[in-house]
Amino acid sequence: VQVVESGGGLVQPGGSLRLSCAAYGSGFSLLLMSWHRQVPGKQRELVAIINSGGGTNYADSVQGRFTISRDNAKNTVYLQMNSLKPEDTAVYYCRARDYSEYRENREGSWGRGTQVTVSS
Image 1 (cartoon, rainbow, N blue to C red):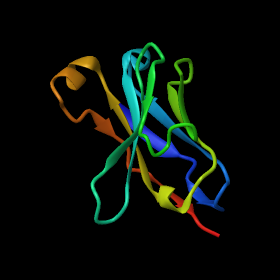
Image 2 (spheres, rainbow, N blue to C red):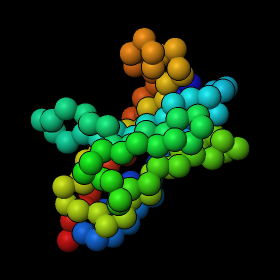
Image 3 (cartoon, one colour):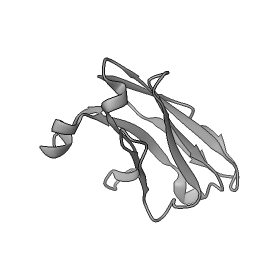
Image 4 (cartoon, helix red, strand yellow):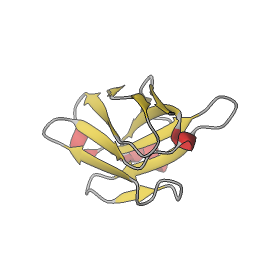
């Protein structure tokens, strides 16, 4: 599976952005999809995750502001980001794993990332 992110950019504090992640390959509906972010000098962190049944989980720092969703007909997962803060500035990465990769803690497929900058 190949994943490609889009939708990053510059936004003012309090603004919104929607990131998209297109997955190329078979079996998208069965994949565990997640968004992560990383700033220079820090570890990549999990932002949000969505399973094949649509169940979701979020980092405490984005709970109530970000929403992850998926459209299986379009092989795409989204991250709607509202009430953005300067500390949300990071490169955002999409990750796809099938359930064997998840159980075996393997990397799966990562995108190249998209920059999100929150600044006035």
